[in-house]
Length: 334
Ligand code: ATP
Ligand code: LTN
Image (cartoon, rainbow, N blue to C red; front, top):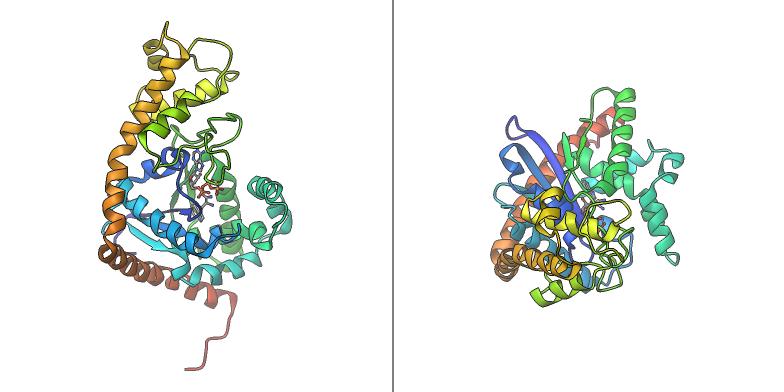
């Protein structure tokens, strides 16, 4: 690639608005990684289509995601931020890799099982082959590392298996990527059902914090967060709600659980929840301000998208050409 830096690749689906889980588990940890890696981030709109989308809203969400990446601190001049659907090589490589993936492997994917259970009216083939497209995303760019939240670990494992299988047959074609899962914030749970992860596609408005929620809504949602009948702020498996709030507070303030327990010793849950709400609202305010500026600057946004789409397409086409050759496709007559 451009220099000798290692390649880092990640992305998010352009489905709905981002949650605090997406932010603390992924996006926040991506900032500054460009000092160490050549960073490439996709707006994963092909993946979004596995769930039915309203076209106008979908287009808006994808652009909003691009601006949120920027607002979180990813500079599009230093990070290649592009749209997955603008680079046809993703779909092309995905077909090929699908022929090197076993149904038995896909049957084991927990995300598929969860989403199939949630969308019983639309269990489509795309939902099933989702991990193959994700493998194509990563392998196209010869990524060394892929920063994601805990829930994506299984998809990284299947990507590695597919890459190793392919390399075993055709020689060293793909870099075998490593998952990079930050300890803090790797799994932020729902505020209403702390056994479930906080999710973008959540229907209960009190369960997720959206990055663009206003201060009052953020504080109100934390006040209503489900906890337990105890009164002590303490990190423990059986105290899922409080432990989740402690994780969130820790991510935002940089404090560990011992420090947090000490800070709220002798204080009730009410005071603790308010402190978490305020800390999160304070953390998100500058991001929200930057978002407001970026989303309005149509010209700059368009120019960055265009420039980075081209860059991504260039990298991707190199890998795809190699794969076409290795598998034995006939070159078109010149
Ligand atoms: P959906 O609810 O539509 O499935 P999602 O909220 O899981 O979406 P994705 O686009 O699938 O969002 O994920 C984007 C990134 O955010 C991934 O790296 C994922 O691991 C991370 N992530 C998602 N939810 C959480 C969470 N609750 N805690 C920590 N990280 C998360
Ligand atoms: N499945 C991912 C989004 C995603 C992704 C990727 C992440 C699609 N392709 C490639 C990292 C690398 C998710 O977060 N749900």
